Amino acid sequence: MINLHQYLTANLESLAARKEPVATWLAHAAKDIEGALSRVFVNHMGLLDWRMEDGGGVFEKCPPLPVLYDEWRVLKQPERDATVIVGANLGYGLNHVLTGTPNTHKVLVIEPRPDMLLACLGQTDYRPFIEAGKLRFIVPSHDQVEAAIQRLDLNLVYGNIHLRNDLASQQIGPEYAQLSHLTRGKLENFSVELATLRLKQEVMVGNELKNYADAMDNGSLLPMKGMAQGVTAVILGAGPSLADMGPLLAKRPGHALYASALQTLPALERVGLKPDFCLAIDFRANMMRLYDNIQDMSWLSDLPLIYSTKLNPEVVQRYPGPKIPLWTMGGIGTYVFQEHELVLDAGGNVGVTLARFLSWAGVSRILLAGQDFSWPAERTHAPGHHAHQNVQSFDPNRDVQMTNLWGKTIYSNVGYLSAKRDLEKDLRKAEVPVYNIYGGGVEIEGSRVVDVEECHQQGLLASQPGARERFLDALRRANRQRVRPVYQPRHATWNMSLRNATKRFEKLLKKPGKHQGEIRQLLNNVLHFLKQDPLYLPYLYNEVMDMAAMVNLKAKYGPTDMKEYRDILKRSLAKVKQVDLALGPEGIERREAAA
Image (cartoon, rainbow, N blue to C red; front, side, top):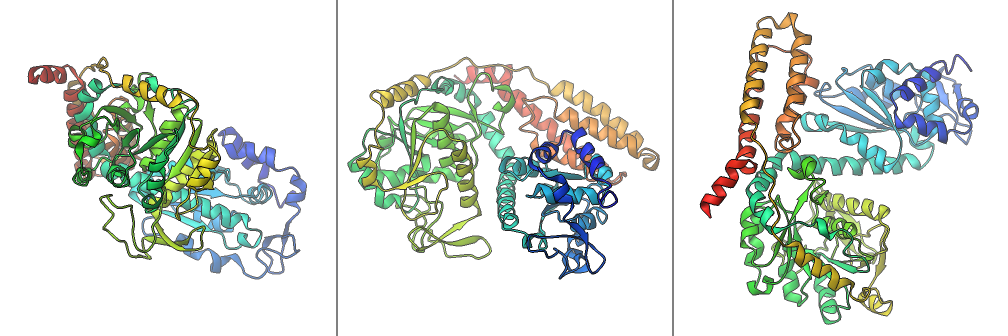
C-alpha cells in the first residue's frame, strides 16, 4: 500500500501550501481514504488500474497508451496552448500531457470523485509541475471551474484550449459526462467574453471616453439601491413568443414594472405594450438601425433609457427621452468608480443585464417574457425587431438544434446559450422567485414555467401598493447632473518611464544570449507598469495582454522582439493621451469653451 501511494502526502502538502481550494475539498469530501486507495490494483497486463463497483478495472479492456491518449500531445503550438482534462484516472492521460509539453503549456485537471483524485495523487510526484504553475487540480463546482478557466486567458487569446474528456473514466459513472458538459459550457462562455474583450474593448472604452462628460450630466443609478423592494418586474425580450404574449400583457398589464432592451422597443410598439423603462448595452454603431423601426419617436419622449456608458455616442444622443448612465465592468469605472457609482457586471446579453440590475435594486419577483434564447424555423424575432426579417436557416457549424418543452424543434446558437447559462447562474444565487411566461423557447433552469392567464390567477403581476411608483419616482430623481471628477494627466510621466525601459531593452538585446533572464524581468516590469493605474487599465487591455504574452509565452528573446515591444508601447501611450484628454482638466476646458 505504501509503495502504491508513496506520493500522496507530498502532493497534498504541496497543494495545501499553495492554498489550492482542491486541498480543502479533498479534506472534507474524502471520508474513507483507505477504502479509496484500496481500489488501486495491478491488472492482468501489469498496469496500475482502478477497480470499479462491478469489480472490473477501468483499463482491463483497453490499455491507456497508445490508444486513449496519444492524440492529447498532438498540438500545433503547445507552448501557447492549455489542456483541460475532465477525469484524472490514475494519471495516465495527465502524465502523458505533462511530460510532452513545455512548461508554458497550462494543464487543468477536473475530477468529480475525491477518492479517484486521491488515488491519482498517490501515483506520481506532481510537485514540480504544481510549483512551476503548469498544473492545477480544480474543485468540480460551477464557480471553481469558471474561475480556473478564466485564468487561461492568455492561452485562449494566443493559442487554444483543448478540452480532453477521459473516456476510461466515463465507465465509472454519469458524473464525468455531466462535468464535461459543464466545463464545455464554461469554455464557450469565456470564449465569447474574451472575443468581445479582445476585438471590441477599444471601441467600448473609446465610447466611454466620448460619453464621459454627458454621462456626468445625466445622473447616477447609485441611489436606486433597494428602491425596487415590493416590486414585481417583467423583463420583456424580443423573442418570437413576444408576438403572441405581448398583446395579452398589453391588455391586462397588472401592476408590474415592465422593463425591456432598447432594441425591443419597436416590437413592443407594434403590440401596444410600453415598458416603464428600457436599457441598452450594445456598443455597436448598427444600434442606430433600431430607430428606423420606431413608428412614432414621440412614444419615447417620456420613457427613461438606462444606457451603458459603452454605448455608441450617436445612439445615446439620438434618444429623445430621459437618459441615465450605467457604468459596467470592463470599462473605466471598473476600479475607480466602485464607491461612487453602481458598476454592474453587465454580461453579454441585455436580458441578463436587466435581471442583474433589478435584483440589485431589490425586486421581489421577476417574470420573463419573450426571453426565448432560440427561434423556430420560421422567425428569429418578434415583428418590429431589426433582425425580424432575417429568417435563419440551420447551420450545423454554428447552431444547435433542440426540442422545446412542447416537443417542437427549435434552434439556438452559442451566443444565446451562453447568455442563458449566465442567466441561470444568476438565478441559482437569486433570493427572489423567477417565472418564465413560456412561449416555446429553451427551458430556463431556475425559473417556473407559467402562462399569462396563470399569472393573473395567481396574482403574479401584482406589486405591493405604491412600490412600482416609488421605484419610478426614484428613477426620475436619478436623472440629475452630478459633480464630475477630474483626473490629473499621466502621459508625460509614462512617456519618460517607458523611454528609459526601452533604452535598457536595447542594451540587453545587443547580447541577448547572456541576458535572457534580465530581458524577461524587464518585460515583466513593463507589464506591471502598464497595469499600475486602475483608471487607464481597462483601455490598455489589449496592450497588457500582448505584453503578458511576451513575458509568459516566449521561450527566448532576440532583436526581432523589439518591433513588437515598441508597437505595444506606442499604442499604450496614445491611449493614455486619449484618457487624459477626456478625463483631465483639458477636457473640462474644451467642453466649457464649446458651451
